[in-house]
Image 1 (cartoon, one colour):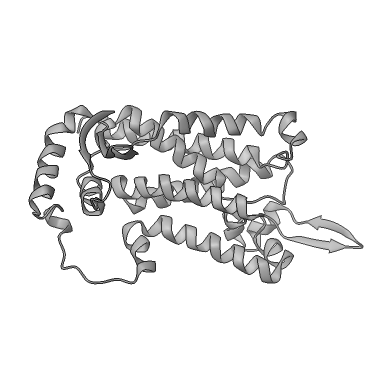
Image 2 (cartoon, rainbow, N blue to C red):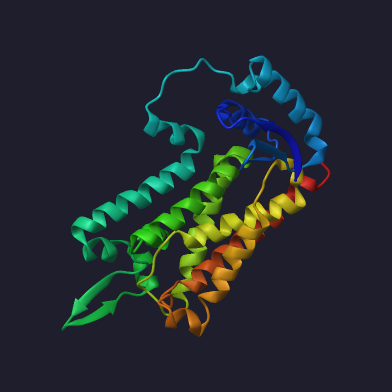
Length: 283
């Protein structure tokens, strides 16, 4: 990371941040004691960033030509859907499902598990995946990703979804984000189901896929502008390994969909490797 400029705490940097993303310049703003510091990821983009900062300081237009449109005031809740529509829609669906679960409880869970769940003579019974797909309930392959079983589960998954998903949409487009969401959601769910588990859920498999994709792109294609703090990578991978140990169960973190995490991470790394090679290949 390369320090570029120090700005006072009270300076509004919103337009500059939006322009840096639009121009695909990898960057990070940090809050320091002396003010807001702008950091550059790839030194090859130093001249482009410097020109953009100078234009911003002069009050000139910053966005690329194809992105310059007359500004229309939007309600605050619509802004995320315009900036990152796939990520924002997935986040909104998770929140909506969580809210509906608070009203209808287990009925919602049974409707979204990877296979149908029922009660016969006081015992839980599960359908088979083959019969579920044959009956047309293909959506169940993805739907468990939208289930969350507590506020902490929901909040942490939504934080990582927004942090990583917005980067992917801003730099590689909504099509790539949708591909990652579907592939990692379905892949992680199938990996978890393969262990014999049915009652599981959460967007964490997708989060780990996004982590793998963003990290690999930041390594192999730094000019694309992706950035993930190294300590965040260490934390998330360390957390994934920790929840696989017996110690996690002792302190109350034993009921975790570990296979979904691993499955999602593998999907993200595979897609990141494929697309980074594809971009590098000569035309």
